[in-house]
Amino acid sequence: MTTDPHVRIQGLPVSAIAEEFGTPFFVYDADTVRADYTRLRDGLRPSVDIYYSLKANPNVSVSACLRALGAGAEVSSETELITALRAGFAPEDIIFLGPGKTPRELAACVRAGIRAVVCESLGELRLLDGIAARSARGGPLPVMLRINPSFPSHGSGLAMGGRPRQFGIDAELLRGSRAELRALRHLRVEGIHAYVGTRFLDPEDVTQNTRGILAEAAGLAEALHLPLRTVDFGGGIGVAYFDNEKDPDVGRLVDGINEAVDEFARGHPDCRYILEAGRYLTAASGTYVVRVLDVKESMGEAFAVTDGGTNHHMAAVGVGSFVRRNFPLRSLDRQGEPAAGQYTVTGPLCTPTDVLGRKVALPAVRPGDLLGVGRSGAYGPSASPGRFLSHGYPAEVLVHEGRAHLVRRRDTPDDLLSPQRLVEV
Image 1 (spheres, one colour):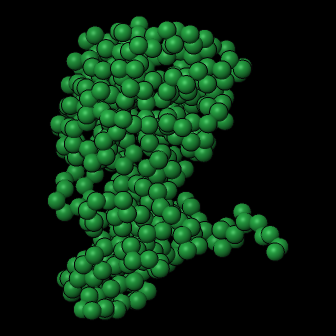
Image 2 (cartoon, one colour; image 1 turned 180 degrees about the vertical axis):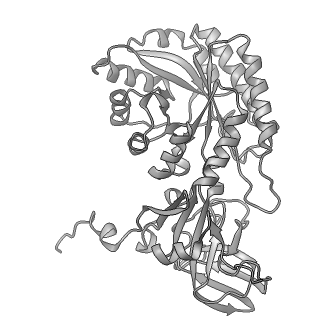
Image 3 (cartoon, one colour; image 1 turned 60 degrees about the horizontal axis):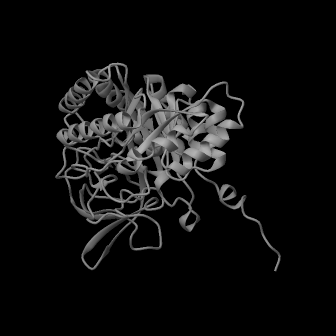
């Protein structure tokens, strides 16, 4: 019996998807998105709402998958707000946050009637109060206050609290701002938001951070005489990318969050909670697919040169990381063949940083082979310099119910050149 060498997604060979849509491209498996969301949703208390952070993957069809599963949306730009609405999220299931919102973005939030604007400074509150005053709303605009907690986060590779940050209002500063909050005439402050870090892999760290945020929210609400209808304790749940990492134990993670919420709910029985998740919900679903253009040797090292790299997948090439480690990378059409050697897999760009994986054990690689970078469903095209060297952004494909759907066509030269204007000199 011959083993099928082709990697499949929902029964479809990735090689057939590549033949239909060309390479390079990102492909997302809707079944994996559903499984990861459901695993989290089924374990959490009903009072905890899961909000999808569009920054992880703002594709409108990926967003629509999560909306259909019951997620809310967390957005951070006017375009992300429009994306969420087009994906079918109800306005009352959308929150908008970010440290530098423009008046135009705030006005768009007011018009849309979203669940809450998450304000990150006292100045932003005053600005939004004025915008709300000029709107045709029939009542006050609901807002949440993003705080910069006084405690440091546990277990994050990218801490975002407990030190000077552009995000949120220092908790201690907020404690003395009761008069400023009472002066707001067109806003209704009804919740606290905090996001202390990202890529948490240890459930105990998430539990400790959640408890810390809930305690800080309770203290602030008491000091400021605020109703506490919602606490958004962020999330930042990570996924394992590297050999020495393990995915979080979701059972332990939801048990820890539930315990923290249950304790808090004794004193705040009407409060609802928001858990933000982006990377956790989409990373495992995605594969970045490239085709090998050339195989060569340089000073004893084997190189596989492909048609995609840094310009599409900055996270995988390690830009901005202190330690360069490989994302999971494998052959997509030589599955089951033993490793024949180690290859440094690169992209087509004129820069030495364009490396998808260093010394990766692979079957014998030949021009035309397909290689896949796994765990690529989060922070791919949207967090990469897609226009570098004018290659443009890649195609994106969603496999849903056994069919491959093109959910973003690749850029053409006209796409790249049409916004430019030629000045005759």
